[in-house]
Length: 95
Image (cartoon, rainbow, N blue to C red; front, side):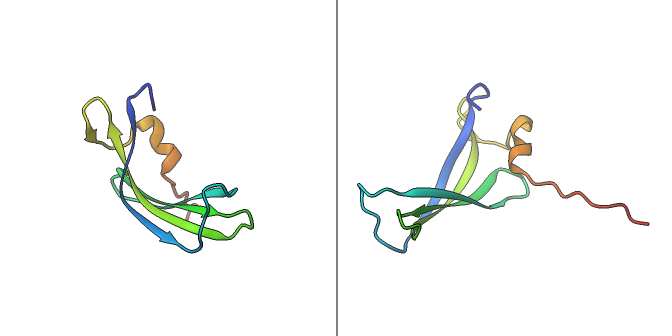
């Protein structure tokens, strides 16, 4: 993505705190892919933060957009990268 000068920009972060998570506490992070728009430009993801006891502490819901750092515009994902993010259904033969 660096050679293509594209990356992600985020918008509309939503925080939901379930439990307190202290600054010096050991924690783990989980990334959950929620959805992608028809044009593949916008993805919705959730980032979950867990404490050392594996209890959910904070969830951040975020919109990610493909962004061209050369033109400073939101773009469709490059063909090289789209297969990593778009799930394709394979259907069986009928008849």
